[in-house]
Length: 123
Image (cartoon, rainbow, N blue to C red; front, side, top):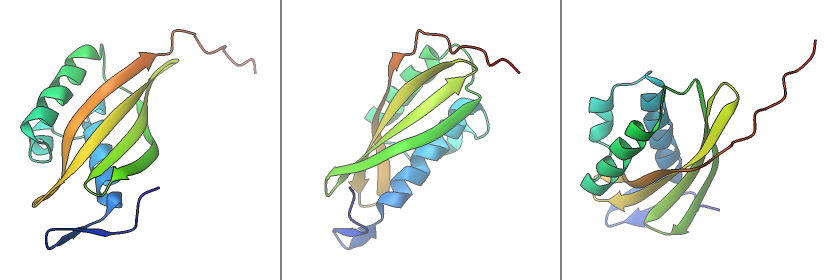
């Protein structure tokens, strides 16, 4: 569980802001937000990881949601999200690092894909 607020230098950062930023990156994957704006919210390593993820996804995701947030250290926030496209869905991780400019995406990756198809509901 993340503390409500904690100091980094003289700036107080809220873990909620890291969750908000992860939602912004998820919206880039769905095509709802511009990738150019997202670049400002990432470190160089984080941006390279995000562009690798964007190349690995075959199509834009239709539904994205944050599942869990955790702060293993005072200057790190880890977010787990689900990205879905019809019956296929994958977990995605975001790692944000606290900088003097606020939270910045430091790493992200897609986790294993769900290979099973969801059964169709009968009406």
